[in-house]
Length: 101
Image (cartoon, rainbow, N blue to C red; front, top):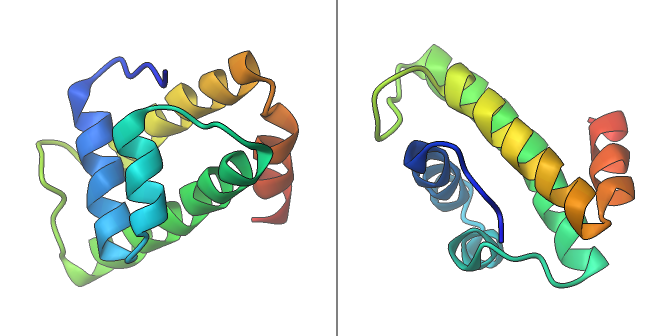
């Protein structure tokens, strides 16, 4: 299971999955489990899409559904998801997405 230090991380991740119309990613976030390398790749690339959307939303004045900045929560999500990918053996998918983004 993806372990979050703060409940807000999951809330923010789901917020951006909805903003980006990614129901497949919402399902992964809700379940808290990545089952395949393909899901790991999708979640990893989504992280960087979420990051870009957060930057655009900040510029447009669109708020996230919790206290704090999107930058703060994106950093927390990064740490949670990277650690999860490492533990689950999907770090190569995570690293590939990070390098390409």
